[in-house]
Length: 407
Image 1 (cartoon, helix red, strand yellow):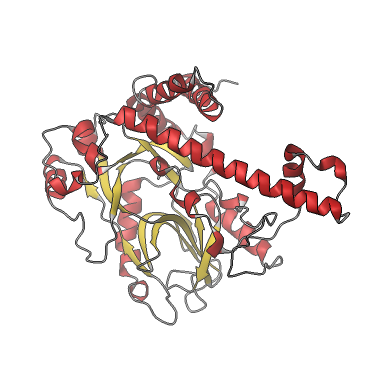
Image 2 (cartoon, one colour):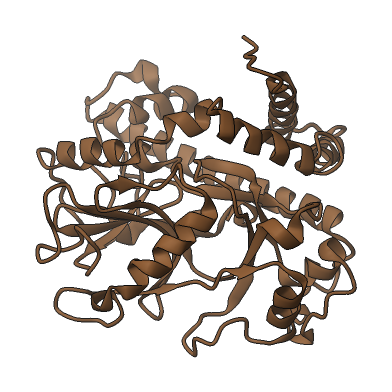
């Protein structure tokens, strides 16, 4: 049903979303003749058709009028965490420090509660009209994107797919017995550097008893710098803080600030900063919503001048990792999506095969009836079982690195 309110053209957003849905459906099952067409349609939608600029304006307008279901439904982040974590107190799971060589139903099954919480980007295919006044740029290290939840005296980390990765004590509010008060919590959007055992904080979802998702990006950054950056306990490893937390730089995209930032290398003064993966761009007025949004953009460093303008002085070091066959962003996106779909298809076939073999063995042992032994039905049988939560050390690296464009 089309929703209306004031002069806001909500039907246009629904039309754009429906177009994206059709393009994605073609991506998931392309034929020989329409594979290239499906990628062109999806890129066209990100670019010229239903332009990013138009969708940004509509989304900003919907934020003001509180007419976005996606935004309204996400205001209960603390309620989600309280319900999920307190429910798990009565459903403990045994952790294992290995990954089985055979298929184990549910071993890597994500937590549905946190499977679609992080705010993800789109490829930035157009320079925003208000780029110099209303946008930030942030350097993103190579690492795992994680949702960090400090609550009830422990800090848990989940991948962007909802997989539990690990838990430990931290100096965050609610992150250890020493910093845990009644209902105190802290929810962060971070990049995890496993080699350096460091968390690079990108955004804030909740602080103590206050949800931050309906605040603008500019306000959330102010809060991080005013409060989180003053928590000395998270800056060093100690008995009560097992990971160092650092704020990622968030640079205004004014001409002088952007030119100064991009002309130097490395992009940050932190000597322990991991290898650079790319740049995220945030609209200052963006609320924190789950899933992809045109108010957050992503570019690899060698795409900066192509999208933002050749007059921007970019340090030559940023172009060293440009692929030899790189021609332009549009062709790169098409090739990138093909590679990601092939990886996804290979993982799906591998998991289905393991499920089928496991199901056959259970038939021989009399655990399940023979009528479910087909690849399709075996998969359904495995998924319907009651499964334990996965261990953090078993998250597949391919899943952590997949869909990099939606970082």
